Amino acid sequence: MNERVRVTGPPRHTPSGRAASRLGDVHEQTALGDVYLRSLLRAQVGLAVRLLLLLGVSLGVLPLAFHLWPSLSGIELLGIPLPWLLLGVLVHPFLLLLAWRYVRSAERNERVFADLVSDPDPDEDGA
Image (cartoon, rainbow, N blue to C red; front, side, top):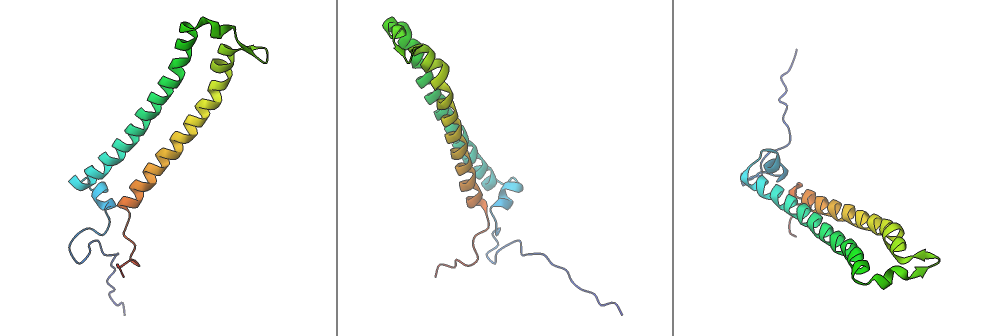
């Protein structure tokens, strides 16, 4: 005949009653999950602000320097005026470098967050 079988999933709570995964706190939008998300957002916004400041200072100084010292405009390298070389050519590799660095740092922040909220390793029992 048909025998009844009880189907169960993985345990949702540890014996102490705490959630086994902090990711559940994030999904359930608990206060602790909110703290985790705010820390990730704070890290990402801080990274973006630092990058924008670096970009604004580094690229904002160039036109100011050419305005304050007009003699810089007369300098030529390889037959190309210095303002054209700096603002028209060398800016693009600099922007690519900043973009690459930003993506790597943002991904690192996300990996740290994922490691923070992931399940603890069951093999590590402190021994």
